[in-house]
Length: 234
Image (cartoon, rainbow, N blue to C red; front, side):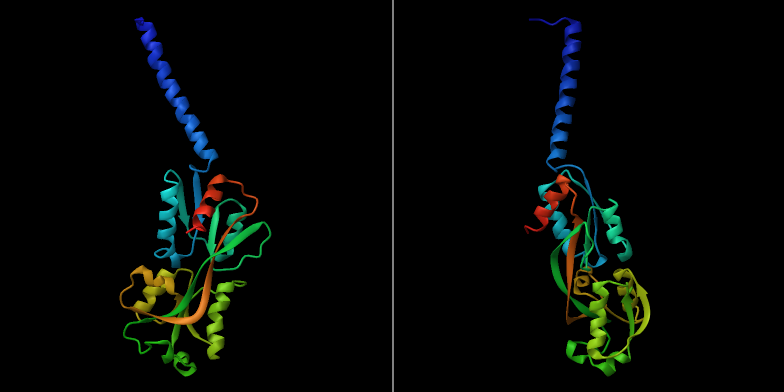
């Protein structure tokens, strides 16, 4: 049957409308299944070049249409941001004890003493109470109640001395730059070795630091559920 001009117009218009409805239906289905949407993840600077690229590669492989926003949040704001929906996941080096927040251990690495390559410290055996007392330290900010801060302090208790701290910083990348400049030595997670930092030596220390992934216990977002399945599968 041959369509009139008016019939052709309506046919073309309805084809467009039906295609748009199909797109909306598929989009809504993907949202329902957790294949689309946006997720905001807070993570420490130390894993920017080690754990995060591998994790994101796994997530985007399974959920290619998902939009991911990465942020770095100060220690004192992490759980507050999580509770108030400013972030959806928080990867931390601190053990969570807050009600309403679930946490699961993600990974473990070790602390390392970071020194310039020309520094006389070469291996762990070079460290002693007397030699460490002579050093200036550049350390992460000591946060009250932080289990990560306590691990760093455990090193100083082990050698029974009070460090001469030149500077504190929340940002490991800034600490690394200052160590390279010869302004002091630092204690950082050994995952910073992946940051391609020439001019530095990382001396592994027998102190372990764990990484935890935290999320809202009552959050039923299917995107979040999918990501947790992916993260803890690999």
